[in-house]
Amino acid sequence: MKVGVISDTHGYVERVKLAMEKFFADADLILHSGDVLYHGPNNPNYKGDDYNPKALANMINESKIPFVIARGNGDSEVDQLVLKVPIQAPYAYAFVNGKRIVVNHGHLLPTDKDKDETATHLHADIFITGHIHTTVLERRGNTIFLNPGTVSPYLTNREDKRTSVAVITDDKIQIFDLDTSEVLMSLNI
Image (cartoon, rainbow, N blue to C red; front, side, top):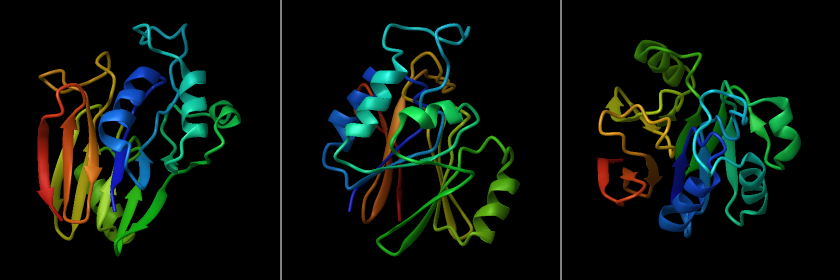
C-alpha cells in the first residue's frame, strides 16, 4: 500500500498538482494534516500566482484517490462548504497495513512532549502533524513522528527553503523534495 502525506497546502493548487503527479499518482490514500485552502487574497501572507483555493477544492473533490484531512488552525467551516471531503477535527485516523496512523495539524500540540503524550494515549504507530512548515521524521519510543513540511515555497521554514511531501509504503517512510524528487529523509518502518 502507498500513502501520500501532505500538509499546509494553503490553497496553492499548482504545487498540489505537482505532488499528485510526481508522488501520489499511484497512491491508495492521501493524508492531509491541515491548512488546506487557507489564506485569501487579502491576507498579507498570500504570495504567488498559483494561489487558487477554489481550484484546489475542486481538485480534491474530483480526486480518484481518497483524501483524509485533519483540521488545521487555518481551516474553517467556510472551507468545508466547498470540500466534499470532511475536515476532521482535531484528529483523523487511518489504519494501514496494521499500523494505526493518527493525523493532527499540531498547532495545539506545540512541544514534542505534548505530541509524545498524545501519541501514546492514542496508541499511534505513526503520528503525523503539520503547522510548522518544516520536515520531521523520527522515531521516539514506539511511535514514528512525521511532518511532511509544506508544498509552498513562500511558506517553507526549512533553512534550505525546500518544499516537500512524504510517502508511506509497506516498509518505509520517505520525505521528498517536491521540485527535485530528492529523498530528504527516510526511515524504515
